[in-house]
Length: 270
Image 1 (cartoon, rainbow, N blue to C red):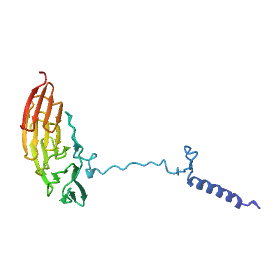
Image 2 (image 1 turned 90 degrees about the vertical axis):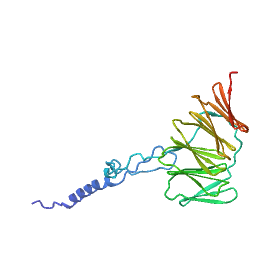
Image 3 (image 1 turned 135 degrees about the horizontal axis):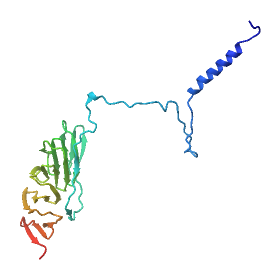
Image 4 (image 1 turned 90 degrees about the horizontal axis):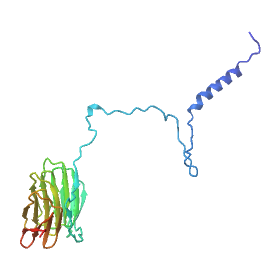
């Protein structure tokens, strides 16, 4: 046995080295952002950045679709060129969305409320003298001359195009047209039989509707409808004026006169 051999300093040095080795890696490394040389210096902790993080997979038993089904409501855009010179239109009616209700405020201060319980509102807007709402099962309209929201029923429709006028509004699906008349506070349903909507315009008390097969002019106060077959021709331009409406189709013009409430065919090649 060796005398005078001291083991304490040796084991102390070894323990100190091992403790230093085990302790240092657990201190976070502070790295400066080199892009911020003249600004504040930011530091971030690099410990654990390279850990393997496997994304959680959705439970297959939940049957949640990856892309939610959306019922589309879009703003309608005319295909024929609309050359109507519209005057400045001031919106004189407004609404607010309350708790499960829409409250419309008419120009005379009257408040008209509609409960939306059980309905999902897809579209709502006020313009000119009217406001409309489109839900998953109803179309609703109110005007400054009405006392309540007028309801029109829609069933099995998923896609709509909405067009707003000063006195009338149109909600168009693939199968039907729903026309709101502010004068009568009424929804008129117009069926689309093997035809598609091409144009819509409203100037004062007249509405012009153009489809792939016909022209339809509606007088709002009387609800009278006047129709012209297009004879397989297309309308490329139309114009609404105070006394007449012009519909142009190549070398042919159909003019609707307000005074006679009839269409006149004009050959532009003469």
